[in-house]
Image (cartoon, rainbow, N blue to C red; front, side):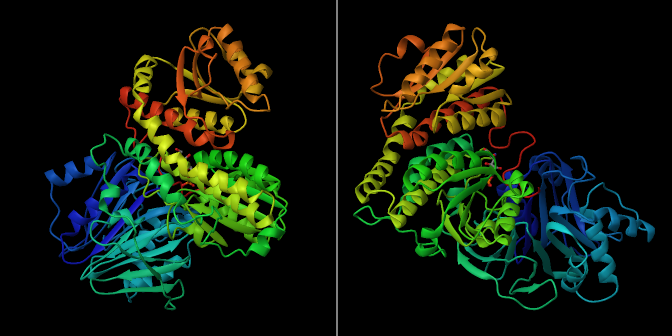
Length: 614
Ligand code: M6R
């Protein structure tokens, strides 16, 4: 939520900052702004709406040249998304400019203090008070770094702050508490960004910051302290993806590109995780096998699409390990006083690693002595840093706000975790584990086949352009896929879309069925448990009431044609792995329908990529 950029070096800061904001715009697009240290008071510009509005403004009224600057792209929390509330915010005398991601919880009290001192606040934001406080601290002497320390000590909540001082062009200073911030290490220049995409075209060397730390960047130096001013070491790392990963590569949307990257992403998520005999090795864990053998309950916490990956994982983990596994929305978890012990394993699933609700859930779990394992896509982000172990999903950067390859690799990582637990605890036979590992290895090819045959989905999107309601039905692992299919349509096409467990239909939702209503149905593979037959009965029931059925079914599953208005064929795989395939047509359909409806697929209204506020 909100993208932040900072730069000091030899290049024109405006160019570097605007380029960084373009790559971070997926984090929030309610407004954008920039501030530069120039000869005189801070130079700044900010504009409601997308970054393009700011760029237009800068083209019409250019700012003076500068090599030190900050920028922001906003997802609004306090105050409407207008020009005044856009960041940067300035101190009373325009000496300090500041951008912010997060929420300053005690802002009402600080606001009253500033107003009582006679300073006029222009915006409705919680951010502006920090700019005033820093400017007042600076006026008493000392550096911007020292002023930042003083002010951070007074702030409550979660925040990343980045500030410049009109009287000191040599530095940009930032502070971080529970909100993302990473430093880009250049040669004669340094960068700050909410994530590495902000500076990936300039450097792939980065420095991770810890909780409650302040960083000062100059052209030739980066120094990090805690909030009390004591020096601390950041953790340096090399970013293992490059600029091309952050570009559209000829696709119309990042989302479409990311859907088509899924065969590669699955391969990368599996890479190096098993030996030739199919025996698994998880190399990024700080939880010992002995501790895993002690686990008597697993609780998966996550939000949105990651929560649905958790629902899929539950079926697989319980089946392979026989450990009871609950799945909870992270924002509900800690408020219900969950029962956690030393032998509870909490698994946090998060693409961004920054989702505040999930972060708070794992913090709560750790205070109760539970072990926490993160399944995460973003190296060095807060959730894995605060977990006892991490399984990275290696999907590469996901820029489209709607998660696709992130979801896919979360499922793959969760399967690997389940198989690993089964291996360590001896709850599945080695040849069964090896068989699933082999089947996982076939998934990139199967997904590619679905992608290659997607023309029918485009025709379907054309046909369903007028639909106002779309339903999704599934059973077993198909149920979370129904939920995910519906979420994708809500996010992208702004349609009323709902996913149901097919068995629940007769308990109420069947009343929604009316002639012509489109219903996607995920049919489980044929098996011993009659799930398939029960799903076919549900399809017959809704068809009898006039639903327009879009049936997703295995290649060799015949006999279903008479109940299906449209058939989408899926390669034959085992039941537990079917979600990996079934989700792909639903992603493509949502992307295509939203495109035809003229929506911004990568930046849907009201959303932001990583939700760093509770
Ligand atoms: O970064 P996370 O995986 O923690 O994000 C969780 C949700 O906010 C996210 O999956 C959201 O639901 C997506 N927009 C879904 O497409």
